[in-house]
Image (cartoon, rainbow, N blue to C red; front, side, top):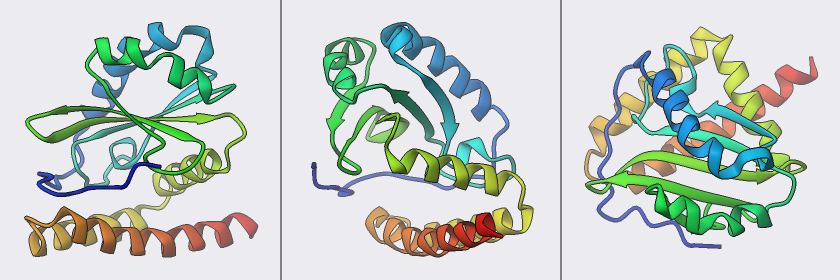
Length: 178
């Protein structure tokens, strides 16, 4: 698994932009022909997929395949359309392709095998936030606070945001049990 490096990563947190949905749809039009029928499902995930949620203006895309090796086979074609393959960057059994400009992340394409446990978690988180505006406000406020406090330290921003997210995921698991 590739080690996460946030050195020199520029980032900003902005209010929700309704155009993020259009950006997602345009990116899918570029990606879909590469994956073709290998793409079982393509979903908009992350902060840009939740109306009202502030976030980094980075489009997160979840793409599900039958076998993760299919993503590896398509790496050369993804590179032709401007994506960099980071391999097993986020977690075992997943692949990450990124599109960047001027050291700013524009798109994260998360590719998972259909039976990977993290797929359900990503979709549950998105769907929960889409129906819980109080949590959206709290999470947005936290992101703005962290970005203001750590404008030049994405690693610290990410560490504290991830701690918050772990607690939110626990809350969502309890909510889903009820």
